[in-house]
Every structure is written in structure tokens, then in C-alpha cells.
Amino acid sequence: SANCALYCGASIDFVDVDSSTGLIDLLKLENDSVSQMEMPLHPMVMNLLKSNQLQYALKVLANTTKNPLIARIASRFAGIVDPDIEIIIMEDTKLKEFIVSRNKTQIDLSKYGKIRGAYNAKEKTIRLAREGGANPHTLLHEVAHALTKQQLRNPGDPVTKQLNKLYKSVKGRLSSYYGSETIDEFVAEAFTNEQFRQELAMLEVPKADMTV
Image 1 (cartoon, rainbow, N blue to C red):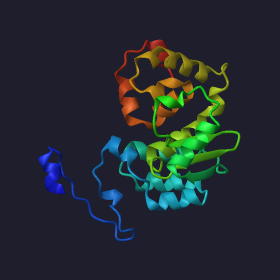
Image 2: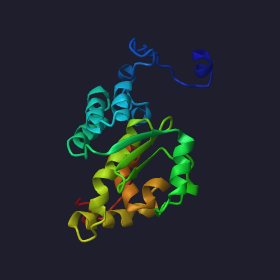
Image 3: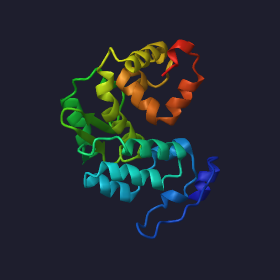
Image 4: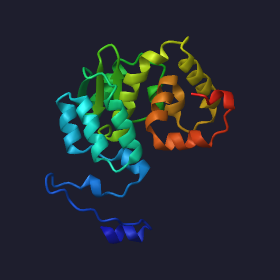
């Protein structure tokens, strides 16, 4: 299989197996900031999420990742997230059916395929797709929603005003539909999506819009 990949022009990295799980040792993977965001969550993190220990799951994520950005965000979120948020792991198709049946947001769900996760403020729940959403990006993205949703609902707040101003000045120039659809998704992606952050950094924005 390695020769097939080489024949197609790919580069090969051999990674040891974690003896405790029989799976790829995630700690020995090359520290690539983008790919690490989409790697499966460490089994310890998943077990903590399944037992509704979100704060500890984030702490373990911060301590086991080789990615400085993931470690920094997870550590910071762990200290301020509501410990009573319930984590629900669902089959990918069931999660999409659930979201579609209850979609009352501004997001047009038909414009993207997989639904990886969802935060519900009223229920205080974070739902993650078992296959597509059990990764650092999706987990941190939904936690970002939990931490910012109330703030973004206060239009008179100075920070919210600045974020809305920044969002409006760049949303038409963003390649990511998801990150440009609403202010909530924009902020969550800006916190947790490395590619999205890199794209934002390359955009020319009036200095008055960049004070946040």
C-alpha cells in the first residue's frame, strides 16, 4: 500500500501503534497544524466526553496534542466552559437528521454535506458525530459556540459591535461558506479553524475593524 501511495506522488510517514489501544499513536504523528485539527480524538478524550466530563476532556486534549494551537485553545476553554454541558455522541446520519428536523437557524444546511456537531444553548448540549465530528476542530468549534453565543446576542456590547463590524467587512471575501454564513460561525471558526485563521490573516481589513 505504501508503494501505491508513492506511485501517486504522495509522501509516506510510518507511525508506531499505541500498545494500549492497538491504533495509530496520535502523539507520534507529525505536528501539522491543519491535519492535527482533523485527527480522531485521543481515546482518553473520547471516554471523558462520553462520561460528560467536558472540562477534563479539554485538559487531556491540551496535554496530549502536539499542536500548540489546539493545546492553547483547549487549555483556555477548559478553564471557562460550563461543566454542566451534556455531551451526546451520535451516529453521523442520525445527527444530520436531528439537526435538519430542528433547524431554526440562519444556516442553509443544503449548502454543505456533513454535519459534524451542534451546540444547543437551551438544552445545554453539544452533539458530536461519531465519525465526522470526533476530532479537535469540531469539539473546540462547538465549545466556542457555548462560550460566545450569549455574548453575541448582546448587540450593544462593545466587543460584539467590533466583531460584527469585522465580520461584515470580510464575509464577502471568504472562501469558506460555513465561516461566512453567520456571526456565530464566523467567531467559532476564527477561534478553532487554522485554515480559516490563515485566510483571515491575509485579508486587508481597515485598522478600525481589527481592534478586537
